Length: 266
Image 1 (cartoon, one colour):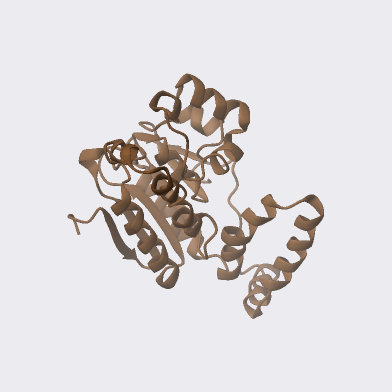
Image 2 (cartoon, rainbow, N blue to C red; image 1 turned 120 degrees about the horizontal axis):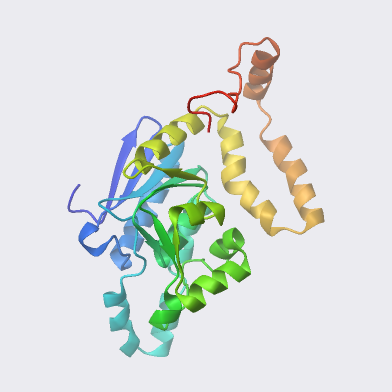
């Protein structure tokens, strides 16, 4: 699988999808986009949770600018058709049937940050850095970043990154909501796998609701969001729900960890 631009493996119920152009800092070209879409579709069919990671020292340095340069001489209509080709790919992750955990290290910039923002959970390591250098490159975000990254950062912080070329450390990224975890260097993938396997133990319909429905509630108005919540709550109820509630009442269910005690509580 080493010659593939995107790798795919199954670890039990977890799909492991790797961006595999380490010599290009995993920059995304059209081949990578197509391969990612196929991997996301496959994962939805045979896995309960997905993990996305970058092979090598970097998660993803964004759009392959060498390929993008060749597009500049194309007719405007052809360039317009290329815009938005990332959207259906990343929507498979952001609003698909299973949750996704992204393991980040090194560069997570431009389109790489757009890809990471489509995951439901992002685990960085201490080498991770975030940036949106589109302003310096004379282009604009094209992988849904104006929606997803802006909702994570807020307008003011996203505008700062795009206008000034500011680079955020992993710690700043966690503080600014770009990631939920920061691990020691080289350990983000193992932590992402651990979280993914933990998520597989959840009720599948609840995982689906969090992965596919909750983002749509976030897009809705207040009234519509409450209505959708009522419908989703009914949709996820199953015989398994009764069994899990019964296990809790009978004290057979695992207790939540106490964050005040030592050990891995998060």
